[in-house]
Image 1: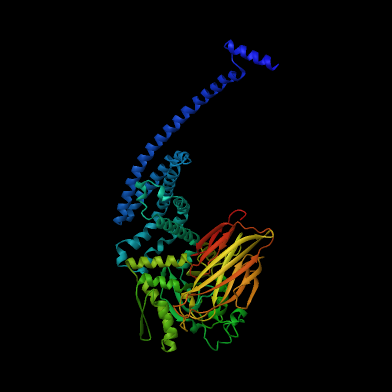
Image 2: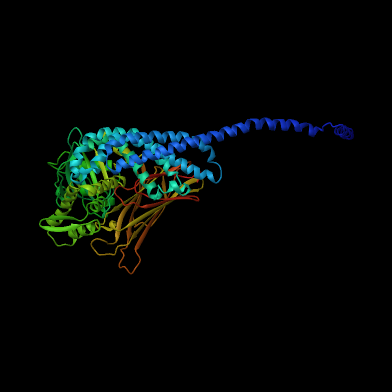
Length: 634
Protein backbone atom coordinates (compact mmCIF):
# COMPACT_ATOMS: atom_id res chain seq x y z
CA UNK A 1 0.00 0.00 0.00
CA UNK A 2 2.76 2.41 0.82
CA UNK A 3 4.44 1.84 -2.56
CA UNK A 4 1.16 2.24 -4.50
CA UNK A 5 0.59 5.55 -2.72
CA UNK A 6 4.08 6.70 -3.57
CA UNK A 7 3.71 5.66 -7.22
CA UNK A 8 0.37 7.44 -7.50
CA UNK A 9 1.86 10.53 -6.02
CA UNK A 10 4.79 10.35 -8.45
CA UNK A 11 2.47 9.96 -11.40
CA UNK A 12 0.47 12.99 -10.33
CA UNK A 13 3.59 15.05 -10.08
CA UNK A 14 4.77 13.77 -13.45
CA UNK A 15 1.42 14.70 -15.05
CA UNK A 16 1.64 18.17 -13.54
CA UNK A 17 -0.67 17.11 -10.79
CA UNK A 18 -0.19 18.06 -7.16
CA UNK A 19 0.83 15.99 -4.19
CA UNK A 20 -1.21 15.93 -1.06
CA UNK A 21 1.14 18.41 0.52
CA UNK A 22 1.27 20.58 -2.54
CA UNK A 23 -2.51 20.51 -2.89
CA UNK A 24 -2.83 22.42 0.38
CA UNK A 25 -0.58 25.27 -0.71
CA UNK A 26 -3.12 27.18 -2.82
CA UNK A 27 -5.56 27.17 0.09
CA UNK A 28 -2.92 28.60 2.47
CA UNK A 29 -1.90 31.19 -0.06
CA UNK A 30 -5.51 32.03 -0.68
CA UNK A 31 -6.11 32.51 3.01
CA UNK A 32 -2.95 34.64 3.32
CA UNK A 33 -4.14 36.80 0.47
CA UNK A 34 -7.52 37.14 2.18
CA UNK A 35 -5.97 38.18 5.45
CA UNK A 36 -3.69 40.61 3.65
CA UNK A 37 -6.71 42.18 1.96
CA UNK A 38 -8.07 42.91 5.46
CA UNK A 39 -4.88 43.81 7.34
CA UNK A 40 -3.32 46.17 4.82
CA UNK A 41 -6.31 48.52 4.60
CA UNK A 42 -6.74 48.32 8.38
CA UNK A 43 -3.10 49.25 8.98
CA UNK A 44 -3.39 52.03 6.44
CA UNK A 45 -6.53 53.28 8.17
CA UNK A 46 -4.83 53.17 11.57
CA UNK A 47 -1.80 54.99 10.20
CA UNK A 48 -4.04 57.56 8.58
CA UNK A 49 -6.01 57.93 11.80
CA UNK A 50 -2.82 58.39 13.80
CA UNK A 51 -1.54 60.94 11.30
CA UNK A 52 -4.84 62.79 11.40
CA UNK A 53 -4.88 62.65 15.20
CA UNK A 54 -1.29 63.83 15.22
CA UNK A 55 -2.19 66.80 13.08
CA UNK A 56 -5.18 67.60 15.27
CA UNK A 57 -3.08 67.14 18.42
CA UNK A 58 -0.38 69.43 17.07
CA UNK A 59 -2.95 72.12 16.30
CA UNK A 60 -4.52 71.77 19.74
CA UNK A 61 -1.11 71.79 21.43
CA UNK A 62 -0.25 75.10 19.73
CA UNK A 63 -3.58 76.57 20.80
CA UNK A 64 -3.12 75.16 24.29
CA UNK A 65 0.31 76.73 24.55
CA UNK A 66 -1.07 80.14 23.55
CA UNK A 67 -3.90 79.86 26.08
CA UNK A 68 -1.42 78.90 28.79
CA UNK A 69 0.74 81.93 27.91
CA UNK A 70 -2.32 84.19 28.14
CA UNK A 71 -3.16 82.73 31.55
CA UNK A 72 0.42 83.16 32.75
CA UNK A 73 0.38 86.81 31.67
CA UNK A 74 -2.77 87.41 33.72
CA UNK A 75 -1.15 85.75 36.73
CA UNK A 76 1.98 87.86 36.40
CA UNK A 77 -0.08 91.05 36.17
CA UNK A 78 -2.30 89.78 39.03
CA UNK A 79 -5.43 90.26 36.96
CA UNK A 80 -7.06 87.30 38.68
CA UNK A 81 -10.63 88.34 37.94
CA UNK A 82 -9.95 87.91 34.19
CA UNK A 83 -8.40 84.46 34.63
CA UNK A 84 -11.67 82.53 34.65
CA UNK A 85 -12.11 82.67 30.85
CA UNK A 86 -8.60 81.52 29.91
CA UNK A 87 -8.81 78.71 32.47
CA UNK A 88 -12.07 77.51 30.93
CA UNK A 89 -10.46 77.60 27.45
CA UNK A 90 -7.39 75.83 28.81
CA UNK A 91 -9.56 73.07 30.27
CA UNK A 92 -11.52 72.67 27.01
CA UNK A 93 -8.39 72.58 24.84
CA UNK A 94 -6.65 70.15 27.19
CA UNK A 95 -9.70 67.88 27.10
CA UNK A 96 -9.81 67.99 23.30
CA UNK A 97 -6.08 67.22 23.14
CA UNK A 98 -6.63 64.32 25.54
CA UNK A 99 -9.32 62.84 23.24
CA UNK A 100 -7.18 63.36 20.15
CA UNK A 101 -4.29 61.45 21.72
CA UNK A 102 -6.33 58.45 22.91
CA UNK A 103 -5.39 56.35 19.81
CA UNK A 104 -1.72 56.94 20.57
CA UNK A 105 -1.98 54.62 23.58
CA UNK A 106 -1.91 51.63 21.16
CA UNK A 107 1.75 52.46 20.48
CA UNK A 108 2.88 52.41 24.12
CA UNK A 109 3.69 48.63 24.18
CA UNK A 110 6.32 49.15 21.44
CA UNK A 111 9.83 48.72 22.90
CA UNK A 112 11.97 51.82 22.97
CA UNK A 113 9.46 54.48 22.04
CA UNK A 114 6.58 53.08 24.15
CA UNK A 115 7.73 54.20 27.64
CA UNK A 116 8.65 57.65 26.28
CA UNK A 117 5.27 58.04 24.68
CA UNK A 118 3.51 56.78 27.83
CA UNK A 119 5.22 59.42 29.99
CA UNK A 120 4.18 62.13 27.55
CA UNK A 121 0.59 60.85 27.50
CA UNK A 122 0.43 60.66 31.30
CA UNK A 123 1.66 64.24 31.46
CA UNK A 124 -1.03 65.31 29.00
CA UNK A 125 -3.67 63.40 30.99
CA UNK A 126 -2.50 65.15 34.15
CA UNK A 127 -2.69 68.51 32.38
CA UNK A 128 -6.23 67.82 31.20
CA UNK A 129 -7.48 66.79 34.66
CA UNK A 130 -5.59 69.56 36.43
CA UNK A 131 -6.96 72.19 34.05
CA UNK A 132 -10.48 70.82 34.51
CA UNK A 133 -10.13 70.99 38.31
CA UNK A 134 -8.69 74.51 38.20
CA UNK A 135 -11.52 75.66 35.94
CA UNK A 136 -14.12 74.30 38.38
CA UNK A 137 -12.40 75.72 41.43
CA UNK A 138 -11.23 79.11 40.23
CA UNK A 139 -14.47 81.16 40.44
CA UNK A 140 -14.66 80.36 44.17
CA UNK A 141 -10.91 80.40 44.79
CA UNK A 142 -10.23 83.77 43.15
CA UNK A 143 -11.32 85.85 46.18
CA UNK A 144 -8.82 83.96 48.37
CA UNK A 145 -5.94 84.18 45.91
CA UNK A 146 -6.68 87.83 45.24
CA UNK A 147 -6.89 88.64 48.95
CA UNK A 148 -3.49 87.16 49.76
CA UNK A 149 -1.54 88.12 46.63
CA UNK A 150 -3.06 91.36 45.35
CA UNK A 151 -1.84 94.83 46.19
CA UNK A 152 -3.79 94.79 49.48
CA UNK A 153 -1.54 92.06 50.82
CA UNK A 154 1.24 94.58 51.48
CA UNK A 155 -0.93 96.76 53.71
CA UNK A 156 -3.68 94.51 55.08
CA UNK A 157 -2.98 92.31 58.09
CA UNK A 158 -3.82 88.65 58.28
CA UNK A 159 -6.76 89.42 60.55
CA UNK A 160 -8.17 91.95 58.07
CA UNK A 161 -7.82 89.54 55.16
CA UNK A 162 -9.57 86.79 57.13
CA UNK A 163 -12.51 89.14 57.64
CA UNK A 164 -12.52 89.88 53.92
CA UNK A 165 -12.65 86.27 52.72
CA UNK A 166 -14.97 84.86 55.43
CA UNK A 167 -18.16 85.27 53.29
CA UNK A 168 -16.54 83.25 50.49
CA UNK A 169 -15.67 80.21 52.62
CA UNK A 170 -18.85 78.20 52.10
CA UNK A 171 -18.91 78.51 48.25
CA UNK A 172 -15.22 77.63 48.17
CA UNK A 173 -15.82 74.43 50.15
CA UNK A 174 -18.53 73.37 47.68
CA UNK A 175 -16.20 74.08 44.75
CA UNK A 176 -13.32 72.12 46.31
CA UNK A 177 -15.55 69.09 46.75
CA UNK A 178 -16.70 69.32 43.10
CA UNK A 179 -13.14 69.73 41.77
CA UNK A 180 -11.53 67.08 43.98
CA UNK A 181 -12.00 64.09 41.58
CA UNK A 182 -10.17 66.03 38.85
CA UNK A 183 -7.32 67.01 41.16
CA UNK A 184 -7.05 63.45 42.50
CA UNK A 185 -6.73 62.09 38.94
CA UNK A 186 -4.24 64.87 38.19
CA UNK A 187 -2.05 63.78 41.09
CA UNK A 188 -2.32 60.11 40.11
CA UNK A 189 -1.33 60.74 36.47
CA UNK A 190 1.44 63.19 37.35
CA UNK A 191 3.00 60.62 39.71
CA UNK A 192 3.33 58.19 36.75
CA UNK A 193 5.30 60.64 34.59
CA UNK A 194 8.99 59.79 34.19
CA UNK A 195 10.62 63.20 33.47
CA UNK A 196 13.78 61.56 32.09
CA UNK A 197 11.77 60.03 29.23
CA UNK A 198 10.10 63.28 28.19
CA UNK A 199 11.24 65.17 25.07
CA UNK A 200 13.72 67.95 25.81
CA UNK A 201 11.21 70.58 24.68
CA UNK A 202 8.81 69.38 27.38
CA UNK A 203 11.35 68.44 30.02
CA UNK A 204 12.53 72.02 30.48
CA UNK A 205 9.04 72.88 31.73
CA UNK A 206 9.76 70.70 34.78
CA UNK A 207 13.15 71.99 35.99
CA UNK A 208 12.75 70.30 39.38
CA UNK A 209 10.60 67.21 38.75
CA UNK A 210 11.15 65.62 42.17
CA UNK A 211 10.12 68.83 43.91
CA UNK A 212 7.16 69.21 41.54
CA UNK A 213 5.98 65.67 42.35
CA UNK A 214 6.14 66.38 46.09
CA UNK A 215 4.35 69.73 45.67
CA UNK A 216 1.58 68.15 43.60
CA UNK A 217 1.09 65.32 46.11
CA UNK A 218 1.02 67.80 49.01
CA UNK A 219 -1.50 70.04 47.24
CA UNK A 220 -3.81 67.12 46.43
CA UNK A 221 -3.55 65.84 50.03
CA UNK A 222 -4.39 69.29 51.41
CA UNK A 223 -7.41 69.67 49.11
CA UNK A 224 -8.59 66.20 50.12
CA UNK A 225 -8.28 67.09 53.81
CA UNK A 226 -10.16 70.36 53.34
CA UNK A 227 -12.94 68.61 51.39
CA UNK A 228 -13.34 66.01 54.14
CA UNK A 229 -13.24 68.68 56.87
CA UNK A 230 -15.78 70.87 55.05
CA UNK A 231 -18.73 70.10 57.39
CA UNK A 232 -16.61 71.27 60.36
CA UNK A 233 -15.07 74.39 58.84
CA UNK A 234 -18.05 76.71 59.51
CA UNK A 235 -17.99 75.65 63.18
CA UNK A 236 -14.21 76.08 63.39
CA UNK A 237 -14.42 79.60 61.97
CA UNK A 238 -17.48 80.64 63.93
CA UNK A 239 -19.57 81.28 60.82
CA UNK A 240 -23.09 82.09 61.94
CA UNK A 241 -22.35 82.27 65.65
CA UNK A 242 -19.31 82.90 67.88
CA UNK A 243 -17.30 79.78 68.67
CA UNK A 244 -15.21 79.85 71.89
CA UNK A 245 -12.25 77.47 72.10
CA UNK A 246 -9.77 76.31 74.70
CA UNK A 247 -6.20 76.28 73.37
CA UNK A 248 -3.71 73.87 74.97
CA UNK A 249 0.01 74.36 74.35
CA UNK A 250 2.03 71.13 74.53
CA UNK A 251 5.77 71.04 75.23
CA UNK A 252 7.17 68.65 72.61
CA UNK A 253 10.48 68.37 74.46
CA UNK A 254 8.66 66.36 77.13
CA UNK A 255 6.58 64.17 74.87
CA UNK A 256 3.27 62.76 76.05
CA UNK A 257 0.65 60.63 74.32
CA UNK A 258 -1.02 63.55 72.48
CA UNK A 259 2.21 65.40 71.69
CA UNK A 260 3.69 66.90 74.82
CA UNK A 261 3.32 68.04 78.43
CA UNK A 262 0.38 70.44 78.83
CA UNK A 263 2.30 73.60 79.65
CA UNK A 264 -0.07 76.52 78.96
CA UNK A 265 -3.69 77.19 78.04
CA UNK A 266 -5.68 80.03 76.55
CA UNK A 267 -9.10 81.17 75.39
CA UNK A 268 -9.98 82.27 71.88
CA UNK A 269 -13.30 83.06 70.22
CA UNK A 270 -13.82 82.80 66.46
CA UNK A 271 -16.58 84.97 64.99
CA UNK A 272 -17.40 85.04 61.27
CA UNK A 273 -13.94 83.77 60.41
CA UNK A 274 -12.13 86.40 62.48
CA UNK A 275 -10.20 85.38 65.62
CA UNK A 276 -10.70 87.49 68.72
CA UNK A 277 -8.22 88.29 71.46
CA UNK A 278 -6.19 85.38 72.82
CA UNK A 279 -5.77 85.31 76.58
CA UNK A 280 -3.19 82.75 77.74
CA UNK A 281 -2.04 81.45 81.11
CA UNK A 282 0.34 78.95 82.61
CA UNK A 283 -1.25 75.53 83.14
CA UNK A 284 -0.55 75.68 86.89
CA UNK A 285 -3.09 78.51 87.22
CA UNK A 286 -5.72 76.02 86.12
CA UNK A 287 -4.15 73.04 87.83
CA UNK A 288 -2.21 73.99 91.02
CA UNK A 289 0.96 71.98 91.55
CA UNK A 290 0.31 71.57 95.27
CA UNK A 291 -2.84 71.22 97.35
CA UNK A 292 -5.44 70.87 94.60
CA UNK A 293 -9.02 71.66 95.52
CA UNK A 294 -10.52 68.44 96.93
CA UNK A 295 -13.83 69.27 95.23
CA UNK A 296 -12.24 68.80 91.82
CA UNK A 297 -12.22 65.62 89.80
CA UNK A 298 -9.31 63.52 91.10
CA UNK A 299 -9.18 60.00 89.65
CA UNK A 300 -6.48 57.61 90.85
CA UNK A 301 -3.20 57.93 89.02
CA UNK A 302 -2.48 55.04 86.63
CA UNK A 303 0.22 52.72 87.90
CA UNK A 304 2.31 53.40 84.77
CA UNK A 305 2.54 57.08 85.73
CA UNK A 306 2.97 56.45 89.45
CA UNK A 307 6.37 54.87 88.82
CA UNK A 308 7.62 58.33 87.82
CA UNK A 309 5.08 60.85 89.10
CA UNK A 310 4.47 60.07 92.78
CA UNK A 311 1.09 61.79 93.14
CA UNK A 312 -1.86 60.23 94.99
CA UNK A 313 -4.20 61.33 92.19
CA UNK A 314 -4.01 62.12 88.48
CA UNK A 315 -3.60 65.81 87.63
CA UNK A 316 -5.22 67.70 84.79
CA UNK A 317 -1.78 68.56 83.34
CA UNK A 318 -0.99 64.81 83.11
CA UNK A 319 -4.40 63.79 81.79
CA UNK A 320 -3.31 63.29 78.16
CA UNK A 321 -2.55 59.61 78.75
CA UNK A 322 -4.49 58.33 75.73
CA UNK A 323 -2.95 58.86 72.26
CA UNK A 324 -6.51 59.12 70.91
CA UNK A 325 -7.32 62.84 71.15
CA UNK A 326 -11.14 62.37 71.40
CA UNK A 327 -10.59 60.01 74.36
CA UNK A 328 -8.22 62.55 75.95
CA UNK A 329 -10.74 65.36 75.39
CA UNK A 330 -13.45 63.50 77.30
CA UNK A 331 -11.03 62.91 80.19
CA UNK A 332 -9.83 66.51 80.15
CA UNK A 333 -13.38 67.86 80.23
CA UNK A 334 -14.07 65.89 83.42
CA UNK A 335 -11.16 67.71 85.05
CA UNK A 336 -11.90 71.05 83.45
CA UNK A 337 -15.59 71.34 84.28
CA UNK A 338 -15.02 70.25 87.87
CA UNK A 339 -13.02 73.47 88.36
CA UNK A 340 -15.24 76.34 89.56
CA UNK A 341 -15.89 79.26 87.19
CA UNK A 342 -14.23 77.77 84.09
CA UNK A 343 -15.48 79.13 80.79
CA UNK A 344 -17.66 76.92 78.58
CA UNK A 345 -16.02 76.12 75.24
CA UNK A 346 -17.08 74.54 71.94
CA UNK A 347 -13.91 72.52 71.60
CA UNK A 348 -10.18 72.14 72.20
CA UNK A 349 -7.24 73.11 69.98
CA UNK A 350 -3.91 71.37 70.67
CA UNK A 351 -0.74 73.17 69.56
CA UNK A 352 2.77 71.85 70.12
CA UNK A 353 6.30 73.24 70.18
CA UNK A 354 7.13 72.08 66.66
CA UNK A 355 4.30 74.24 65.35
CA UNK A 356 5.52 77.18 67.43
CA UNK A 357 9.00 76.72 65.93
CA UNK A 358 7.48 76.79 62.44
CA UNK A 359 5.61 80.00 63.27
CA UNK A 360 8.82 81.58 64.52
CA UNK A 361 10.55 80.60 61.29
CA UNK A 362 7.76 82.33 59.37
CA UNK A 363 7.75 85.48 61.52
CA UNK A 364 11.48 85.87 62.13
CA UNK A 365 13.03 87.01 65.45
CA UNK A 366 10.25 87.82 67.93
CA UNK A 367 10.62 89.78 71.17
CA UNK A 368 8.77 88.49 74.22
CA UNK A 369 8.43 90.67 77.35
CA UNK A 370 7.21 89.38 80.72
CA UNK A 371 7.41 91.30 84.01
CA UNK A 372 9.94 93.69 82.50
CA UNK A 373 12.25 90.95 81.24
CA UNK A 374 12.87 90.80 77.51
CA UNK A 375 14.06 87.90 75.33
CA UNK A 376 14.32 87.52 71.56
CA UNK A 377 13.10 84.16 70.27
CA UNK A 378 13.97 82.55 66.96
CA UNK A 379 13.19 79.16 65.48
CA UNK A 380 16.76 78.11 66.37
CA UNK A 381 16.95 79.27 70.00
CA UNK A 382 13.34 79.23 71.26
CA UNK A 383 13.29 75.75 72.82
CA UNK A 384 16.55 76.08 74.73
CA UNK A 385 15.86 79.72 75.71
CA UNK A 386 12.41 78.99 77.13
CA UNK A 387 13.68 75.98 79.05
CA UNK A 388 16.60 77.99 80.43
CA UNK A 389 14.20 80.69 81.62
CA UNK A 390 12.01 78.06 83.28
CA UNK A 391 14.77 76.02 84.89
CA UNK A 392 18.04 77.96 85.22
CA UNK A 393 17.48 81.71 84.97
CA UNK A 394 16.98 82.34 88.67
CA UNK A 395 14.03 84.62 87.96
CA UNK A 396 11.04 84.58 90.34
CA UNK A 397 8.70 81.67 89.73
CA UNK A 398 5.83 83.97 88.70
CA UNK A 399 8.04 85.55 86.01
CA UNK A 400 9.32 82.22 84.75
CA UNK A 401 5.82 80.82 84.44
CA UNK A 402 4.54 84.04 82.83
CA UNK A 403 6.98 83.68 79.93
CA UNK A 404 5.23 80.56 78.65
CA UNK A 405 1.83 82.22 78.35
CA UNK A 406 3.30 85.50 77.12
CA UNK A 407 5.24 83.77 74.35
CA UNK A 408 2.02 82.04 73.27
CA UNK A 409 0.04 85.30 73.01
CA UNK A 410 2.92 87.20 71.40
CA UNK A 411 3.30 84.65 68.61
CA UNK A 412 -0.44 84.61 68.02
CA UNK A 413 -0.82 88.37 67.71
CA UNK A 414 2.28 88.70 65.53
CA UNK A 415 0.87 86.03 63.22
CA UNK A 416 -2.43 87.91 62.87
CA UNK A 417 -0.55 91.17 62.25
CA UNK A 418 1.68 89.65 59.56
CA UNK A 419 1.57 91.16 56.07
CA UNK A 420 2.84 90.32 52.61
CA UNK A 421 5.41 87.52 52.33
CA UNK A 422 5.43 87.01 56.12
CA UNK A 423 1.68 86.36 56.03
CA UNK A 424 2.10 83.77 53.28
CA UNK A 425 4.80 82.08 55.36
CA UNK A 426 2.41 82.03 58.34
CA UNK A 427 -0.24 80.33 56.19
CA UNK A 428 2.40 77.80 55.15
CA UNK A 429 3.20 77.15 58.82
CA UNK A 430 -0.50 76.52 59.54
CA UNK A 431 -0.75 74.05 56.66
CA UNK A 432 2.43 72.35 57.89
CA UNK A 433 0.93 72.05 61.37
CA UNK A 434 -2.24 70.46 60.01
CA UNK A 435 -0.44 68.12 57.58
CA UNK A 436 2.07 66.92 60.21
CA UNK A 437 -0.45 66.67 63.07
CA UNK A 438 1.12 69.43 65.17
CA UNK A 439 -2.22 71.31 65.21
CA UNK A 440 -5.15 69.15 66.30
CA UNK A 441 -8.81 69.84 67.04
CA UNK A 442 -11.57 68.38 69.11
CA UNK A 443 -15.11 69.75 68.59
CA UNK A 444 -18.05 69.11 70.86
CA UNK A 445 -20.42 68.90 67.87
CA UNK A 446 -20.47 65.18 66.84
CA UNK A 447 -20.98 65.78 63.10
CA UNK A 448 -18.18 68.35 62.96
CA UNK A 449 -15.89 66.05 64.96
CA UNK A 450 -16.51 63.18 62.53
CA UNK A 451 -15.53 65.45 59.64
CA UNK A 452 -12.29 66.40 61.39
CA UNK A 453 -11.50 62.73 62.04
CA UNK A 454 -12.04 61.97 58.35
CA UNK A 455 -9.69 64.83 57.43
CA UNK A 456 -6.98 63.61 59.82
CA UNK A 457 -7.10 66.83 61.86
CA UNK A 458 -8.43 65.31 65.07
CA UNK A 459 -5.57 63.07 66.26
CA UNK A 460 -7.99 60.15 66.38
CA UNK A 461 -6.78 56.57 66.37
CA UNK A 462 -8.15 54.41 63.57
CA UNK A 463 -10.32 52.11 65.66
CA UNK A 464 -11.33 49.48 63.11
CA UNK A 465 -8.49 48.64 60.73
CA UNK A 466 -9.00 45.71 58.37
CA UNK A 467 -5.26 45.02 58.01
CA UNK A 468 -2.23 45.09 60.28
CA UNK A 469 -1.75 48.13 62.52
CA UNK A 470 1.09 49.74 64.46
CA UNK A 471 1.37 52.89 66.53
CA UNK A 472 4.33 53.50 68.83
CA UNK A 473 3.46 55.86 71.69
CA UNK A 474 6.29 57.42 73.69
CA UNK A 475 5.66 59.10 77.07
CA UNK A 476 8.57 60.96 78.63
CA UNK A 477 7.71 60.85 82.33
CA UNK A 478 11.07 62.01 83.62
CA UNK A 479 10.24 65.72 83.55
CA UNK A 480 13.16 66.76 81.32
CA UNK A 481 13.26 67.78 77.67
CA UNK A 482 15.24 65.07 75.91
CA UNK A 483 12.70 64.84 73.09
CA UNK A 484 13.96 68.10 71.61
CA UNK A 485 17.06 66.15 70.55
CA UNK A 486 16.07 62.44 70.55
CA UNK A 487 15.77 60.70 67.19
CA UNK A 488 13.38 57.76 67.03
CA UNK A 489 13.16 55.10 64.32
CA UNK A 490 10.99 52.02 63.95
CA UNK A 491 11.51 48.76 62.04
CA UNK A 492 8.85 46.06 61.94
CA UNK A 493 9.16 42.65 60.23
CA UNK A 494 6.34 40.24 59.39
CA UNK A 495 7.16 36.54 58.99
CA UNK A 496 5.49 33.12 59.00
CA UNK A 497 6.19 30.51 61.65
CA UNK A 498 4.36 27.22 62.20
CA UNK A 499 1.56 28.31 59.87
CA UNK A 500 0.92 31.59 61.70
CA UNK A 501 1.90 35.20 61.17
CA UNK A 502 4.38 36.75 63.59
CA UNK A 503 5.73 40.27 63.81
CA UNK A 504 8.84 41.75 65.41
CA UNK A 505 8.91 45.50 66.02
CA UNK A 506 12.12 47.26 66.96
CA UNK A 507 12.08 50.83 68.28
CA UNK A 508 15.42 52.61 68.48
CA UNK A 509 16.29 55.91 70.18
CA UNK A 510 19.45 57.93 69.54
CA UNK A 511 20.39 60.77 71.93
CA UNK A 512 22.91 63.17 70.33
CA UNK A 513 22.64 65.83 73.06
CA UNK A 514 25.11 65.89 75.95
CA UNK A 515 23.91 65.53 79.53
CA UNK A 516 23.59 68.91 81.28
CA UNK A 517 21.54 67.96 84.33
CA UNK A 518 18.49 70.12 83.64
CA UNK A 519 17.41 69.69 80.01
CA UNK A 520 19.17 66.58 78.71
CA UNK A 521 19.50 63.68 81.15
CA UNK A 522 19.16 59.90 81.19
CA UNK A 523 15.95 59.03 79.36
CA UNK A 524 13.12 57.22 81.13
CA UNK A 525 9.88 56.61 79.30
CA UNK A 526 6.72 54.53 79.12
CA UNK A 527 6.43 52.98 75.67
CA UNK A 528 3.27 51.48 74.22
CA UNK A 529 2.79 49.55 71.00
CA UNK A 530 -0.82 49.55 69.78
CA UNK A 531 -1.34 46.48 67.57
CA UNK A 532 -4.36 44.55 66.24
CA UNK A 533 -6.63 42.84 68.78
CA UNK A 534 -5.78 39.20 69.39
CA UNK A 535 -2.02 39.67 69.12
CA UNK A 536 -0.07 37.71 71.75
CA UNK A 537 3.32 38.88 73.01
CA UNK A 538 6.02 36.23 72.48
CA UNK A 539 9.23 38.08 73.26
CA UNK A 540 10.56 41.33 74.73
CA UNK A 541 14.07 42.77 74.94
CA UNK A 542 15.26 46.18 76.13
CA UNK A 543 12.64 46.91 78.79
CA UNK A 544 13.52 48.29 82.22
CA UNK A 545 11.88 45.69 84.43
CA UNK A 546 8.20 46.59 84.16
CA UNK A 547 6.05 45.50 81.26
CA UNK A 548 2.57 44.10 80.66
CA UNK A 549 -0.04 43.49 77.95
CA UNK A 550 -3.51 45.04 78.02
CA UNK A 551 -6.53 45.27 75.74
CA UNK A 552 -8.24 48.57 74.95
CA UNK A 553 -11.84 47.77 73.97
CA UNK A 554 -12.64 51.41 73.14
CA UNK A 555 -9.84 51.69 70.61
CA UNK A 556 -10.12 48.00 69.64
CA UNK A 557 -6.41 47.34 70.09
CA UNK A 558 -3.98 45.13 71.99
CA UNK A 559 -1.47 47.30 73.87
CA UNK A 560 2.08 46.10 74.56
CA UNK A 561 3.50 48.20 77.43
CA UNK A 562 7.12 48.57 78.53
CA UNK A 563 9.30 51.04 80.42
CA UNK A 564 12.76 51.91 79.12
CA UNK A 565 15.89 53.53 80.51
CA UNK A 566 18.69 55.01 78.36
CA UNK A 567 21.91 56.38 79.80
CA UNK A 568 22.76 59.98 79.00
CA UNK A 569 25.56 60.94 76.65
CA UNK A 570 28.30 62.29 78.90
CA UNK A 571 30.44 64.24 76.42
CA UNK A 572 30.93 65.01 72.75
CA UNK A 573 33.98 62.74 72.77
CA UNK A 574 31.80 59.63 73.09
CA UNK A 575 29.21 58.38 70.58
CA UNK A 576 25.56 59.36 71.03
CA UNK A 577 23.63 57.20 73.49
CA UNK A 578 21.31 54.60 71.99
CA UNK A 579 18.65 52.21 73.22
CA UNK A 580 16.53 49.61 71.45
CA UNK A 581 13.26 48.00 72.51
CA UNK A 582 12.33 44.83 70.60
CA UNK A 583 8.89 43.22 70.87
CA UNK A 584 7.76 40.04 69.09
CA UNK A 585 4.09 39.06 68.89
CA UNK A 586 2.00 36.38 67.26
CA UNK A 587 -1.35 36.73 65.48
CA UNK A 588 -4.30 34.31 65.50
CA UNK A 589 -4.34 31.42 63.04
CA UNK A 590 -5.44 32.38 59.53
CA UNK A 591 -4.55 36.06 59.97
CA UNK A 592 -2.74 37.35 56.87
CA UNK A 593 -3.49 41.06 56.31
CA UNK A 594 -3.06 42.69 52.91
CA UNK A 595 -2.12 46.09 54.33
CA UNK A 596 -0.47 47.68 57.34
CA UNK A 597 -1.54 51.02 58.81
CA UNK A 598 1.24 53.03 60.45
CA UNK A 599 -0.29 55.62 62.75
CA UNK A 600 1.81 58.59 63.82
CA UNK A 601 1.72 59.55 67.48
CA UNK A 602 -0.03 62.94 67.62
CA UNK A 603 2.43 65.81 67.84
CA UNK A 604 5.51 63.59 67.57
CA UNK A 605 8.39 64.34 65.24
CA UNK A 606 8.31 62.35 62.02
CA UNK A 607 10.02 58.99 62.69
CA UNK A 608 11.54 56.83 59.96
CA UNK A 609 9.59 53.55 59.77
CA UNK A 610 10.68 50.46 57.84
CA UNK A 611 8.27 47.60 57.14
CA UNK A 612 9.55 44.29 55.74
CA UNK A 613 7.92 40.99 54.80
CA UNK A 614 10.09 38.32 53.18
CA UNK A 615 12.28 40.02 50.55
CA UNK A 616 9.90 43.01 50.36
CA UNK A 617 10.73 46.19 52.26
CA UNK A 618 9.47 49.78 52.37
CA UNK A 619 10.73 52.78 54.37
CA UNK A 620 8.64 55.91 54.98
CA UNK A 621 9.16 59.08 56.95
CA UNK A 622 5.94 59.18 58.93
CA UNK A 623 4.91 62.83 58.63
CA UNK A 624 1.33 61.63 59.10
CA UNK A 625 -0.43 58.28 59.32
CA UNK A 626 -0.02 56.04 56.26
CA UNK A 627 -1.20 52.68 54.92
CA UNK A 628 1.14 50.38 52.96
CA UNK A 629 0.10 47.45 50.76
CA UNK A 630 1.91 44.23 51.69
CA UNK A 631 3.16 41.74 49.05
CA UNK A 632 0.85 38.80 48.24
CA UNK A 633 1.47 35.84 50.54
CA UNK A 634 4.64 37.57 51.87
